[in-house]
Amino acid sequence: MEENKEKIELIKKSFELKNLKKYKEALELLYKALEYDNLKQDNVELLSQIGDLHMQLKNYDRALDEFQKALAINKRHQYSIQKCYDIYYETNKLNKALNLAQKMCEENKTPQSYYNYFKALIKMDKTQDVIEIFNSLPDEIKLDVDILYLISTICTGAKKKLLLEKIISLNVYNTDANLDLAAIELENKNYSKVIQYCLNIEDDNPLALYYLGKVESNNKNYTKAIDLYTNAIKLDNDNHNFYFDLAKTYSDIAWFDEALLALKKSINLDLAKNNTNLLDEKYFLAGWILIKQNQLQKALLNLNSIDKNSKMYENAQILIQIINLKSMNLSQAKKKLEEYYEKDKNNIILIDTLAIVYKELKLNKQAIKLYFDELKINPNSIYCTLEIIDLLIDEKEYDKALEIIENFTERYQNCANIYNSLARIYYRLQDLNKAINSINKYIELDKNNAEAFYFRGLILNDLGHYEDARNSIYNAIKLNPNNAKYYSQMARSYQNLKEYKNALLYSKEAIEINPNEINFKKQAYEISLLIGDKNQIEMYKNQLDRSEKILKMSR
Image 1 (cartoon, helix red, strand yellow):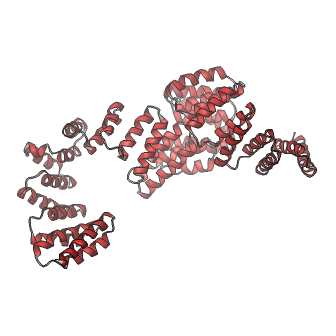
Image 2 (cartoon, rainbow, N blue to C red; image 1 turned 180 degrees about the vertical axis):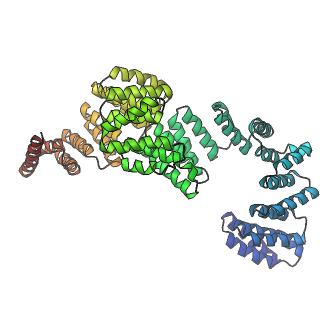
Image 3 (tube, rainbow, N blue to C red; image 1 turned 120 degrees about the horizontal axis):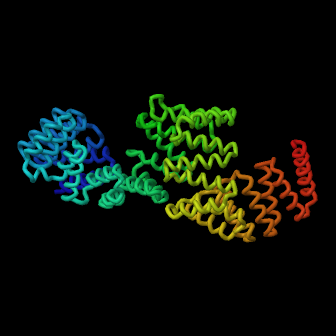
């Protein structure tokens, strides 16, 4: 009796360890428990559990040995038979798997037996045999949802869809069928059906979240799309590569730093899995973004990584040429790209690249025209619309910019960048209250943009809200501590709050970061006058005088 209690305790502890995935420790306890058995019949369950733990450790030969020991005692032990089949299937011993599955079907005509049989045949590319056997089966087996789904995997087109819909009619919450139907409808752009199928799936399914993210991205609801992609990645950042779609969504709203970070993770994942055929489009997007950020060498490195046989190669050469020419002679780049453009006016990459050159040469009106041409080809391009708006602002065509913004925000209320453009317009028109409302909306949508907090601080300083301005600029400095103008604007807040020593500290920091900016030295000199420290007054006066002399000489 005491021995039986000890055996039960060992088995109980082994299961606890198994649940914790401590398989080796669990094995040791089961082997000890096995020592208590005298009757062979009692050993069957223990032997099968020992075999299962060996399977978890991928010790397939040992596992098979234990299951066969169990079957030697009880040749009809279904768990051990199934596990032997699983081992043969997993280790690619398909003939053995098939033979065992056939015997299972002969002895026990259950859906599970036929499922095993079909699975082995499919892996051996004997799909026609599967169809013939399936058609001969009685309805109670043919209507098993697992078997129906297995059959759907070897079908295509309308037949596949019909089978999947049959599964849903039998079990509306079948995860695999819902996911496959969602993928089909996503391809067909039936977004309402994609949502319907995804809602039939548990909330924490990463693929369902990913498909919903694709829907939101296609509907230009980028904030929702980013949230869904991010949640999918949290649940599964290895089996599926969700990072690329996240990167594309970030680039659509011009969040280029975030896009590059997601792209890097996507590329690393493909390299780790040796999915080299998937890399070219990612290298191209990285190159395109890096050109926009003026990181030409990094852009060139990515574009040169694209395979010559890739469909991205020709467009990559356009970007590479602009990098090479831009580094030497921008007007030469303009001439060459205009030659390309005369031959092909529908190449979006070419249009966009030439527009970048026009922007660099301050030919804003020509850049605007090109972006409008691009919008004719791709009317839903948020990037193009944002570029047009910012160029119109630079050209002081505020009414036209506001008209485009109004139409834009009717469709895309959650695009953060548009509120930054609005703030720029209102600030230039000296409508500071509207400017502050706009930049507040931007920050509400994107709390990680240092420039937005700086701009809000600047406007608040202009409005005389110096305490609020200081708090906003503090956030900007936390996000980007290496921007001199942030410290200068903080100094302005402290100066207006009459906290002159703090003001001078921040002004000094601005000078240290950018010692060539004369306005920072003027600010420090003015603050030192307010403090009345003669040494500091003389020091900043000398610095200011030297800078002014250098400036005059350079003219």
